[in-house]
Image (tube, rainbow, N blue to C red):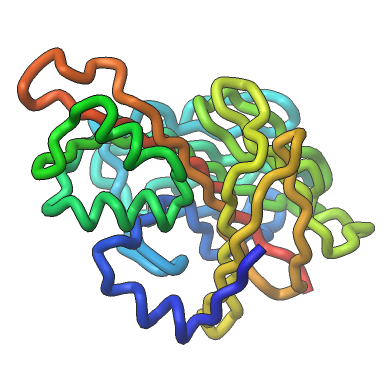
Length: 269
């Protein structure tokens, strides 16, 4: 485990080796039954970033799950916040899920790609890239984002659940439960199977927007338990990097494909 202060991470934020996270952010993670709920789609670094409007052509999936039932979110083109709705009329845990459509990028230089693989702990990616004979002056990647947020309606009682995202972080404890002991447990999966011994980053944000990043690893069952602090907001993030299934099909096909999982929630005071 390694821990970085805001000062250190902030100094590195301008480095091109640091990737941009993607997450769902609610201005209020606790609302009363029947109250207004809004949730933003965010893209940035260090748990701070740009708010993205909702566009259907950029969205593969956008839905909410409550009391075990999943319903699509009927967003309108250009909505910002992306989610605008009345909360259910009953207490419970609301799960918001979003999958972005695939996007592509070409790294501007080899060092940037190397820095990304080091930052996200893809230990064999550079050797695999060279062994496959891929070019170093034109590294192409396709990426998808798989995000969830936990919002408490009233007492917030209930459980997160696996929603079938290709890579997914699922909370096994509920931070809104009255008996929550400030130890959060999450499960990391890829194609429904546990991801063992994988880097997971936890971003903690204070009400004053001071951010601390802690880097952990999942255990042999794909689980992670970590301490949280009342009054803080959290973003949990992990990334899959795999060879692109269509590599070599055309001159512009990507060599790599990344899948990003995120989970956001708050811990009540």
